[in-house]
Image (cartoon, rainbow, N blue to C red; front, side):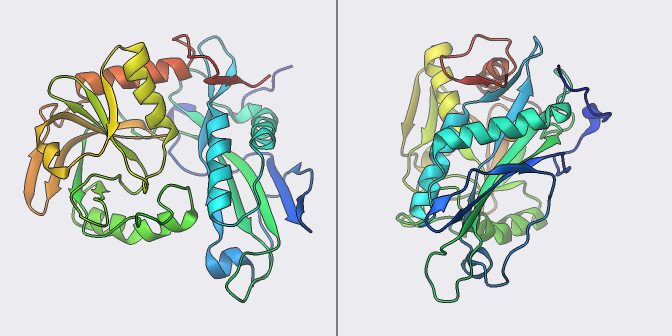
Length: 343
């Protein structure tokens, strides 16, 4: 029997945190993970000397559950989130929480909070946040011996209220990640490092930062929380290739959609900043918004204005957005293995 939906004004939800009924918690101690359990307790208690508090040993993921047009509750490619979290753990010397257990735990959380999954057509979705942190005491600089894995979910409104209006970004003077650093994993510390730059950008009237590579400062990398996707004037979809950017699941899916579903030319390659002025469209892609269109980029006072303008998404980015959201919402037949149904 399906749970009755919570009495929430779904259409007016913001993109923010709202505690739901249950979350998953597992603990790593004495070299192994326990079975994990669902709990109603939304607070975390730990040592003042916990590794996460001393040396920021933590990583996280973000994915969503949706109600499809025919009323099913589904997730989008959770196996890739599980894989990426495994890679984050390995790089941060944290114990791997296996992908198979990850998917089961995420599914259990969604099932337990079914009443919080927004209805189809409301514009809202259920955002799922798996995260792991060092919970054991550490005073010398070394990995902790104890960890906690948690997964909570919260209903969120659309990232853009009133449609996806193109944003204005600036070329940033700060570096996001070093070439052999942690830019390719979803470590909390990457986001901590970007906070000053984003606050500074907002103060200056910009929506986001464009980070260039830290070595030559000539190649496009990503923003603080999203990957870039560009469209050339002859309709080719291109995205930056770099070892220091996060392998976005949304971006990988959009590139597949471009090539295999829409029959467009699509390429992942190094992108010189010099090329950007010649592109027709620009977007930022990620789980929260799928694609945020970019109308202009400010390079230290010099403006690059995309032909797609400041009023709406460009035609190719709009097509990519419509196709991917159509797959996620069950309106378009998905590639095999992309949609995971909660039963």
